[in-house]
Image (tube, rainbow over all chains, first blue to last red; front, side, top):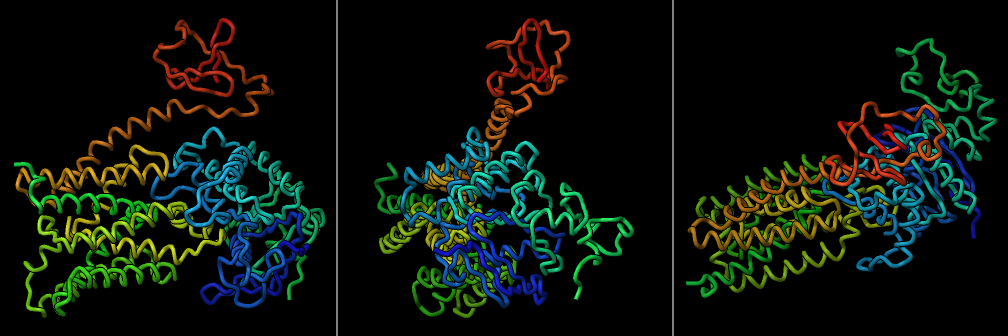
Length: 268
Length: 334
């Protein structure tokens, strides 16, 4: 069995003729917790979307759990939380129905949900503290609660690699702490976690490695402590706002996180 | 004279029953994808198919199925490839379809009157051959839309997550579009091309006024579709009105009744929804959280008129926008 959960090599992704991810190398071992940080438009979302096959790679390779992406079929081993503001669609759906969609990778068409499926859905609902809302329509929940529904859907898959694209946007502090405990439990069981984030919040204590992207390239790859030292900023302020990232914009002269400015970085 | 003693009415009722089941079944997925008007667009594309049948001497029902399926597939492919958003892709084919239909009918020497029975349905002239085709296509639509409900639900709910679950998203997307095309052409003989979209959407809109879950909405919409179709045919027989519009107007009347009822139900549910049991409340870590409700001569209890709402291990009474809970000889604000 391969020890690698995710292996990205020399990956370039071009969207609409524009290179968004440029020659990125990134390896994630089983059980490792890696966070991908960066400002708006840094390519962090596109990187994980390419890693899960949602956008095609222009060049380079991706291996999921030791298997090259084009021939990867074991999707029941991958959990994915897309970057979405809402779990609702045009027709009402209960919290439970949305979370149960996380079991589809394990179900044959026309097969019914088995006891194992129900147990996994129950556990996922319990993990995000939505058990008592399971029969409610997702559209009736708040934005943060809907985000927790999407996280529960990924947990219900019982994955070996969990990819979360900004899962804590709009989630309150109490439930961020709860999510931190849930991810810590999964991480200690050997689940590899790739977390795309603007702001780590309480999740910071779980992170083994931080990867900072800027303009589609990896600008930093190391432990969170090294990252904090390298970028000379307090660790609790892992957010890069659009104003800060825009050079010459309204925020000119305002000191921001240093990865938003060229100093200290190995510019080519 | 009972309406069931006429052969043509028996066939009409059977056709109405099947259309009433199939149209909302597939329509639920279209509404979920926020492509509620896809049925209407396909109806107009099918018009070209009908004209093609008239022009070439083939059965219009068959050519309509073929053209509608091709058109529906192209709309979905355009949408999936990101070449055009769903509604723009739909509009392109919508206009192409109606223009092609009118043009070809003219060439075939027909007139608007020829198209009329397809546009608005002619349920009382359904033949045995029509009926066999309608039964076969309806069974197909029902098997897929009910049997593959978990998969189609996931694809229409969140395409990206469905893709990372390994589901063949494009194939399922095309399948929904093709089934919509099949349903539209089947309904051509009952409610007609122009009104079938209503039967795909209106029962779903009515159902979701009262439901919270997807499966319940799907089942309820199918039930409403059957009721509207059968009662529409029945009403039109006795009032001598056109069946298609009667069915659609009855379906809309259902929505008009369900909408205010749904609003009341949702409001009632929201009032009685338990308050979130936050850790701060449980551990009483905030000493200043103890706020006493002032001047409270009223005693809360069962039937006091104030909604009792669960809040962790106790009950809050909602009183003029405040949340009151009994504490010794007074009420606390929660």
